[in-house]
Structure formats: structure tokens, C-alpha cells
Length: 392
Image (cartoon, rainbow, N blue to C red):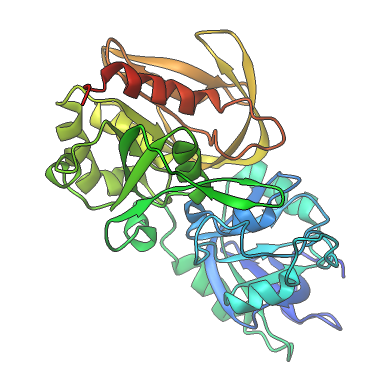
């Protein structure tokens, strides 16, 4: 079905609709759960990993437009997830969900969406919608799957307009763990599944602002026993575990809001001479704790093909990204150095604290969007742990 950007009456066969805050209406075919969800409409350019994307806690509050047309081709399974409960609000596809054709698939993507109460819409001109987001910024919208074809468009426009948006919203509290737990699962291998860390060399406390499981696996793979603590943990809560290092995880929402409780804790950790590594929201929160500022981006970075230049080595990495906020690069405090830059739009992608074992990046080095260009960052962190570890 071809979508239209206007019209209150659904065309024949329409069982889903996407309504934007400016009144634009896009008709299509419903997939997933028969329900309605409101959120920020973004796009992701990745060619693979739709299940990982849908379960990434950093997508809390987002309705994801997939620019790649063949979504569903590897089905769904219980291993390719980044969190137990998906935080995304729904998905938008160009074509109907592809039939699964992979030996690891245990269910159809449509069934997986229904099981997690996630609605979707297929038949949308995703190129047109993506250009709209690219040129005008990510809009608020409502996605509705109604098999009976009954839609109240004026009410949906009003709902999209009244949704407050992600700026000023703290979502880390919604996706963080409720209590401290230990993590020892390592990377997946064909025929064996995930492994287990048996001989840890270091102890890392990971602050969970919406941590992806594969980040924790990357740490465990390099010999780190990981203690995961809630986002609201204080500096005392974190330091009482006597970690060799602290990891600040990815997560959703406005870093300035999450920073109201996270920044004081990070400042307490910074007062100690222990390594700190931050990714995504963790990078932004570290920057705030060091005196930098963040801002909302018009459209954000979401996809597995973003080139980033390491300013220290001159090398270019192909990275996976998912963020709608960014650290400002025009007023970095003294002692804070920019280490990485986006070759798409020149925005800041990494920082370090001069003379200290403290660094962070905006992108996701664990996501491996084909290449593993950025895995060196985990090794850099572990080398810092090695240098400062006190012999037993």
C-alpha cells in the first residue's frame, strides 16, 4: 500500500496508520500487536540487527523507521537481544515482514512483536519519511495498528502534539536494573552459544543507564567480572564494591535530566584515581560531570555505517550509533580533549581527561556492524585496569 501524507479516511485495506504532530497521516498495513504507541519517530540505516535494535534500551521513547527494506529475514530468537523487555515504542517498515530463513530462528518477527506488545506499520514509503526526518528533525508521532480499520485521526494528532518529547525527559530510570547483580556471560560462538567467565582478572562496576548486554559481554570477554548497579546509585554505592574500574553505560533520554542524580555520583568517582570508560549516554554524563554541556540533535545518529575519525591515530572507524543528544564541542573545559569526530556532520564522538585514565565515546564499539573497528576501546580500558591494579 502506498502511503499518503494527508487524508482522514483510510484507504481500502488500511489496518495501521502513522500520525505526526504536524497532522501528516501515513496509511499502511498493521504488523505486530494491535495497539497504539506514541513516541519520537526516528530512522535507523542498519542493514542487519533489527532484533538487537528493537531491544536496545537506548531506543526508549522511539518509534523506529527501518530504511533497509528486508526486515524479518532471520526471524527472531532468544539470543540476539540486548534487554529482556524492548524499550522501543514500535517500528515502521517499507515492505511486509520477510519470512524467516535462518537456522537460529525460533519465531516469526511478527509473533515476536505481538509477544512484546509492539505495534508496527508496513507499506510506508520509508525513503520519503526518512528524508522528512533528515530535513526537518525527528517529529513526535503515534503509530496505531487497528485490524478493524477504525481510526480517530484528530484525536491521534492531538495525542502526538501533547506528547512532551525526549528533551527534558529522564528515561534511564525506566530501563535500569532494579537491584545490583553480577555479570559473567562472555561472547557468543557458533555451536556453543554464550560462554562464561571462569578466571576473572579485574572487577568492574557498570552503572546501568540502559546497558546493552553485549557491552557487558565484551568486558567479561577480556577478563572483567562485572557488577551491575542501578542508574541511581551514589558514588558511595559504587565505590563500596572496590572496583578496579567503572563503566558508564549507554541509555536513553536527555542526559541533562539523568545527570541531576548521575553527575554527582560520577564526580565522586572522578575524585578517585581509577579508570572510567563511558559509552553513549555514559559518555554524555561523563562530559557533564567534567563541566561540558550537551544539546538535542535535530535528527540524531542511528545506524551501523557511521564513519568516525580517531584524532589521535588518524584512523577512520565504521561505527554503530544510536543517539539523539550530543556533547557540545565548542566549550570543552580545560583538561578535556576531543578524541573522535563524526565524518558525517563533524560532531564530537569521543573525549578523554588529560593525564587521567578517563575516556568515553558517543558510539557503540560493541555492536560490530560488520567490522570490529572499535573493539580496541575495550582493550584500552582493560589495559588501564592492568596498569593500576594493586597486586593481591
